[in-house]
Length: 241
Image 1 (cartoon, rainbow, N blue to C red):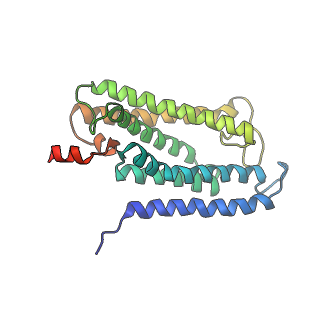
Image 2: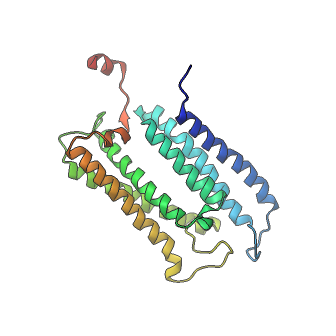
Image 3: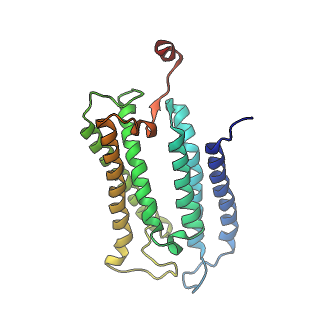
């Protein structure tokens, strides 16, 4: 009997959850009221936000496969599972099921988690830019850890820029400057979500950078299990045989 492939199951479960949600949201978009003065329930702008997130999530689910084929990189199965779980938690649970509003600190948990994942991706870029299948031993572990940290924090900043831009263009509320009821926050309260996201992004990235530094310094091999690497071609395989 074949061994059950948990990675494929989780990926397909997340993909079809987002696909079915997108279809449902398109229907609800036509039926929902347009105004923001509705005391209870969601309006069109809420469904627009959820639909945009689901569409981006569907694209994000196909992205690892496209990148792997286009650039001939090998993505660890553990990283793919974590990636799929993050998208499910952020988009389906967070936006569609309103966990951002109903579950305390849900957004904080996800941003901390994403900071760690982006930190691991930063270590991967060291291998990819150096065109090797392992992190180069001639580079200082501290330098690599600092690069991974800065890489993760920079992507976190880009994400906040994306949220700010689309909040303005499409009238969304990704930066949570308004309550679920539509009441807009003022002053420091309106900035709190964005600044908290950036702070926990830094925290998650720092934890992963520290773990990666220890792994490289003491050669535990842990960080290599989470890093992307170039696929070996037939010539490379013959040489390593």
